[in-house]
Length: 298
Image 1 (cartoon, helix red, strand yellow):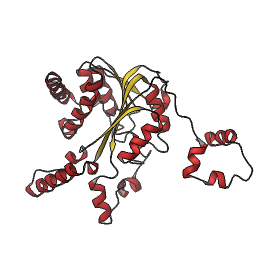
Image 2: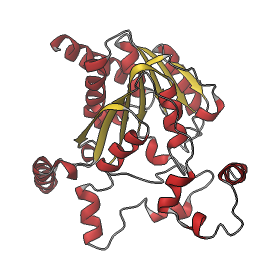
Image 3: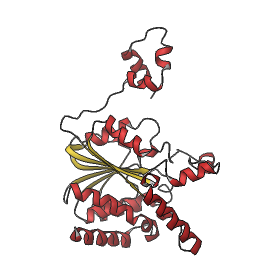
Image 4: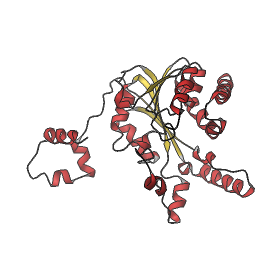
């Protein structure tokens, strides 16, 4: 593991030196990179095949490729800052320099390569999905080889930071200014989850060996150089050490069983949380007809 630790640190430095958006973009995420890479190394050493969905500027993906993983990345590169000037070109050229196979598309625009990858990553993406994450998860898990590993990292909606905001009457949702003044497609968080909800979600998908950990990742984005900032930072971290579920990020993984099949829509399960579809089905519409009608609205 010391050999791999050296490789991780060296790969991060190499990528930082070549990253087109500056070292200050990557610096706050160094711990995140190490958490994710450590999870991967426990299961799949290089040159395992990795698919990263929603890869953004391919910073982590370049690090993995520099460690001799075979990396495919998917991103539509339509975030607001991606569209500025030549930023898309910068990202694509950076990915190419580091042997990352970047597919510029949404998941819906790419034919699924069934059972090709040892590891699939969904990092900071599931909270952006508008509506059910079921289709995204089906795509991700379908891409895994049998016994392959799905790794998800997502913000914790029940973090200490969010709880404090609620206590003081503030919102723990996306900043109103971002929502109100947003131009074009909405790209921020739609729904954040708790640790229990993420475990439940992977159980719905029938994954095995589900393992969740709580990590402080977003905490390191906050300045903590001045004395008072350091005091608040250390106190916050100590509280989170006592109650790990207060940490700001969820890192969860699960393996694909050999007999896995994609999860189909279920009106019986949906009706548990939305009983109107039973209560007001005055015309005794069949499940098959109703599912077709709902699919036409998508």
